[in-house]
Image 1 (cartoon, rainbow, N blue to C red):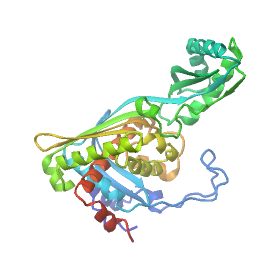
Image 2 (image 1 turned 30 degrees about the vertical axis):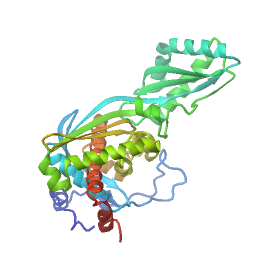
Image 3 (image 1 turned 135 degrees about the vertical axis):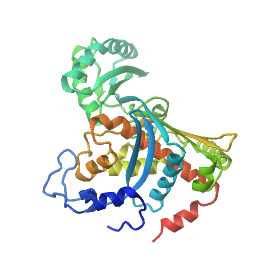
Length: 378
């Protein structure tokens, strides 16, 4: 591999010590005889996607101060360079502050009855059964924990939304399995039986951008902020706080007019690239990329920026996190254990915020097209 364009001490140190991740660098072939059961069916091979490193990201997270190199898998030229620039600006200004606020993953079974009265009676009854449903959850999972039960009535039907904590896993399979188990118990004990039911009535927001995910929590709710100094804005981002904030105001108004869910520049780019590199469920970008960004110019010329992601579906165990390359990517980020899931979510949010800084400056100063011409074309 050619690293002549990668100017950082981390890569040089890894290469010198022969510790550059073997699966990423291609030094060790992946065993294609494995079935990868649980990840793929009818396995025939791998789709190779280029991977780059962005960083180093300086972050004040829940676990304290830390520095992270972030693997990003993408075919879009200019993307890693843009995120590296935003990360540099934030890190040189003292670092990004990130906090994981909560963890809730939903499954929303639907029940239909002969009439409205039966549906209302069932809705009241099922909420009163929360202690027994919680006990049923613990019968099939050591990690899932029932947090709440909410009902939404429509005609003679009722959507019952079960919210769970999911530990270090992203949790979609976990909540599906436990919901299937407790659903059988609910049906058996219900004082009035539904005429039909589904394990999911499309109310949970699973893999869909939706207003509910924006206003509540789906996955992990994470907030990141940074104050970029006037000098660094000028030297690194080649812009000013006033110009970036003005563009952000314009973009937010346009997002409202276009019916977007949330307001952001391109957080899908950050999350998709990290998700692929680190074995996350990439389809969850639909809800994970729903967020609210803020840019405010301060009187001294500094820029305050924040990003709130209320639907960040990520995990450090389960899913694709145990695949060789993805496992090594998590190890490179120092986010490979069950205890690291909050830190991993916080890094994801901070990187996404860094990208908002970079793209905001690029568009505000008219550099956007030139950057893609330089880095995004053969």
